[in-house]
Length: 270
Image 1: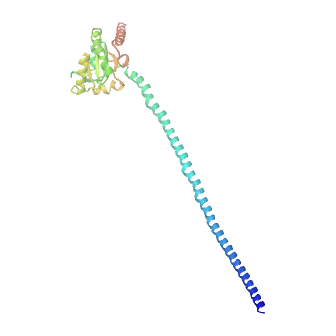
Image 2: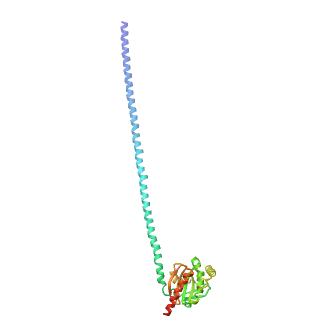
Image 3: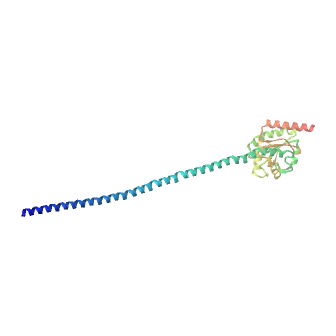
């Protein structure tokens, strides 16, 4: 009897142990399921924001920055700067030389020749470099007057003056008078006047030299564009022959003077 009771008691303990094992296994399974849900949720919660942030922060700003900073400013600045500079340079190069250079080179010589015909110097009063008074009556002293307009700063003027001095002596008895007109000396007491005297002494161009007066400046000298300029006039101050710009040697001047004297002689005979 006791043995059977003990046997029954043992079976009951086994059942209780089995039930306890089942309960423990169920609890572990439930814990495992709950733990799995939490991990999955955690992964989901961490993964989705990571994908969203990366695509929003890395992809979109990269596309926006490249289009704004790289392409548009480069195309806008280059096209604007290059187009404006090209148009400005082209207009400056084409317009300015046409307006500035052509009228000066083409029109001035023609105008000078036209206004010089006739009484070239008109009525004037001035002084010689020696301080004497002089006017247009100086031309009456010779049948042909060679008026050489020069300046103390002009190298070509000074280089031809020794031969002009020789020509003045050579043609003195043939009716030629050479007259110097100093375009940068207005009074006899200036430093420029003293420089002119030194030049005349060294070159032996000791013919008469007139100073620039107001009458001469506002007269024919307005037409003179360069020095030396030489013009020939008769005993009444009328132009004879051409206007000669630039220096020449003795041989060239001798030929010009000889032709003008011959023409003057021919006109007197006729």
